[in-house]
Structures are given as structure tokens and as C-alpha cells.
Image 1 (spheres, rainbow, N blue to C red):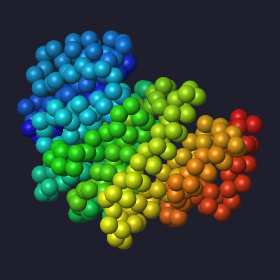
Image 2: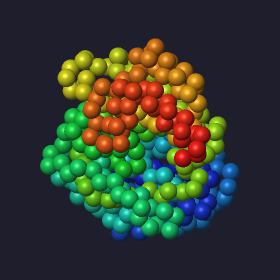
Image 3: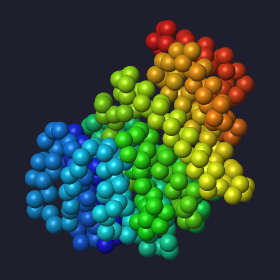
Image 4: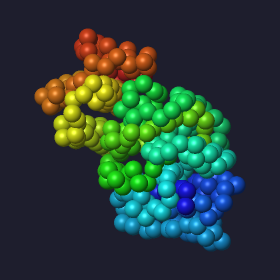
Length: 329
């Protein structure tokens, strides 16, 4: 079997049928892929709607489990997967037409690909395209670390194809019940991978819903995002110490990673209107744990500007945060 499509399901009754339709309208032999739907103790009617839609299909598995979050649902799917390659699809998102056919063509051209990154459309609820994610085109695979340093990439697990043997060989699984689990997972995956390829074709559509994590205004959720980001950052620094041999490729890889983690944290503090005293306290904690790392020059203009402000004029960052919070900018 070529592909296992893993779909976590939680509180998505208005989206799940549309998601499944995008999978089964692929014009791809159903014997060559399987759908693993992981019901993560969803409180709404998602499970029944999925069962009704899949009632005449033969290549699916539905697993119900006690809530373990997105990462835990994906882990269950990985453990049960029979396909050579894994696609992660969130239940409010879509596969574009002929995605599986295109991916099949790509993997047949190369030996031992471990990760393929592909493009995606960012769409609204009516599927109107808001923006596009377009990776670089590679003529030959690179190691994961070289790829990360040299090419455009995003942290999502849902615009990538993963080799199942590769995930199992390095025991790559997601952290459970945390936010930004994709970034943590891919930090380890790209470190270990020897064969990463990217293609500049859009194969998925990411639907921007009003209640998505990135658009949430709940203070409890926002505080957990910041806390989880810092906790994961600390854990990954330990991962570096345990696994890195300090060669040039690894140093560049982790330096870029840590710079982006640091910038991500302060972007969140700005976005969620943290006070100056809270920001200072968090910076102090990062400095004490050798996590205030902002030395890698970035190609992204906005992130590079923030990096320079954090590095050369931290009081200016505090003023920007104060003005945003005071005037609700």
C-alpha cells in the first residue's frame, strides 16, 4: 500500500465530510491508500457523520480514543498505518485534486525519500484562496539539515509526506497535549533525515477557520501557547546536546532553529499583549537557560527586522509592545 492518510477528528462536524470527500475524490485506486480516522473523544456529531460517509468504503479505519490532543491522535495513526508513506490531514482541511497521483509519481522517481515538502493554499471557509505556500524546487534531495538552512520551509506536518520506515526507525512521534507540536516534531525529523525533497506544487488547502488556534483570543489558550513554546524550546536544546556532534551543518541548523524559536516567542508576547514586566521576566528566564539566541541572519524581512530589534534595541521592543497594548493596535 502506498499511502496512509491520518486524520485526527475533534469537534469538526461542519467540516469532516468535506475533508473526507477531498480524499475520496482523488481518482486514485482505493487499494493503494488507506484512511485512518482518529476520533479524539469528539463531543459533537463528527464521528457519526464520518461513519455515515464511509459506510460504503472499504479502505478506512476509525479509532476512538480518550482525548490525547492532535499529537496523540497522529501518533495513534502512525502506529496503525500500513502505508509506505504518511500524509497528515487535519479534519478541517482538504487534499487538492490528484494529490495522491502526483505524490506517487514523485516517490517513484527517487529511492529512499524520507520527507517530501509540497505547497499548499491558505483558503477561507468558502475555499477562496487567501495566500499560497510555495516551497523551493529541488533537482535532487538534500539532508534535512541542509534543506532547512538552504530552502524555504514551514513547520507544519500537513504539507509534507513522511516515509513510514523513517519515522519508525528514529521513533519519531509527536508530543501529546501541547501546541506547536509540528515544530517540535519536524526539528527532530529534519535532523535525522538524509533525503528531503521539495516540490513547488500545491497539494493541500489549509482552511482558516474563526476558531483556529492561531486566531484564538482566549487568554488561557494564548498563555499555554507561550508556555508550550518555551518548554519545547528547552527540551529541544537538550535534544541538541544529546545528539549533535557540533559539526558545521549541525551548528547552522540549530542556530537558525533557535533564532526562529526565540523570535516566535517574542512575536507571541507582542501579539497577546503581554506586559513589559512579563516580557522582561520571560527574557530573563531565556537568558538564564541559554535560550535567548538571535544570531542567525534571516531572509524573511519582517523576522529579520524583529531579530535586529531584539538583539540591538530591546527597549524599543518593549515600547512597541506597550503602544500596541495601550492603543489596541
